[in-house]
Image (cartoon, rainbow, N blue to C red):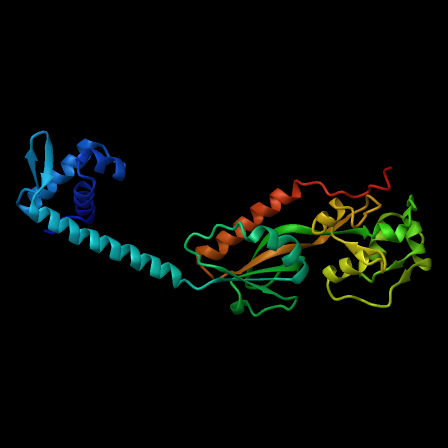
Length: 297
């Protein structure tokens, strides 16, 4: 019967460390456990591996040769594991542009991916084929067939504009937004209805309908109009004072940002990433948004 790999590893540690006590420290074992392993190994090999020299025990010549071969074998095993890990295909994550740049990118660099390889980010508003991604972040109300859903954060919007557009003016009522051009957004009517404002007939909309919220934000920064934006995604612009959210009314939902995986994908790596994204979402939801600064003056 061949000895166990663990016993051979203990032998190599004893020879390399020069003593049973130091080997025990390296292996997080007690000296008694190391001594028992060596005695068992000697019985299995039917020959002595160490001899006493005064108060020390030293390996026999044959034991030193065997330990060297074991060391080479363990290094080969470690190299094989490293090679296997490096060959793991990247985890394919797809996300829409604004969410990817404003929410995902600042967090993704901190993602711990044990055994999952690298994360390959695909930024697109298009719906990908389920087999073209491992994890997808998409916006909606749920109910995607064949996909398991992990809700992250609700879709939130509130009016934002550049301080230069106000020219020192303070806004006190939502209806005063009718004095400015609004950047097109499908939720403007719902936002004004939520504020019980009757200014809908007086609203003026900019001629350009930008395809992403990131471009809406850039246009607002340039003073091109008032944008309906997410206070959580664009919090840094509010904190820096580059944009102002003058009113406390924030539409939340019914759509959410979801992390999605294929229901028939049994791998742990995609679900590990989704669980981590959910943790990040819970942490971010605890941070208050700086809205209503002018409204509550």
